[in-house]
Figure: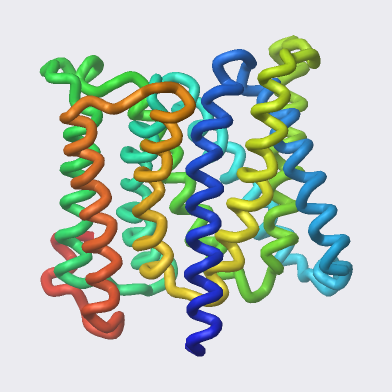
Length: 309
């Protein structure tokens, strides 16, 4: 990998992280006033507008040509997965009071990504990576555990939504990683916005929600849509063209810090000491996972892998 390409990848990944950190803030602010279908309609309508303007600016007309039937099937599959992933993400943002908690719990995504990459991308993982996954799971448990022994009341409300979001997000990541050289990132982003916009519109009609929203919700959605459906996704997809998933994971692990700062400045919220401890453990776990992939070549099998995979 060329140094210039690596630097470009790191900057794109950092840009994606800062943008998505602000998505937590602006989406939380908007979702306190509107329903998820209302939110999705305007959020992805603006997001689609931004990405189409970007595609026009880049004169990316050729990306729509020469797509195979397999590429269309991939886009269809990704669109369906994105509907589930995005729904559970914003549902968790809506029901969990502090978006920082959602961010910390979302660090479980690399665990799912590693397992899915092992099975579908034939990527192997090391002892250190496995140790990092254990740390992430411990941190997530510390954050979400309420102290009750009953299974139905054991974890904080919304933790299951983060779990489902992380799982579907990992599936999306694996499919995108496998097809990133065949389908342009701009096209992936456009397809994502179209699927989510159509789904939000249909949900709005089904639940008979109003098309009219408050001015403050509109402003938060307007700003957040520039950061979320457009900047976060396009920068994230582009970063995958220049750096490894491990490098991106290290940079992405800082997301919680930015969300923590934004939550404090925007909402005056600060997590409890136990949540901060759990969040720190998940961040350390993600970094250990990433360092493990650097430390050990992927052509070496994880010892006794069958007992852990």
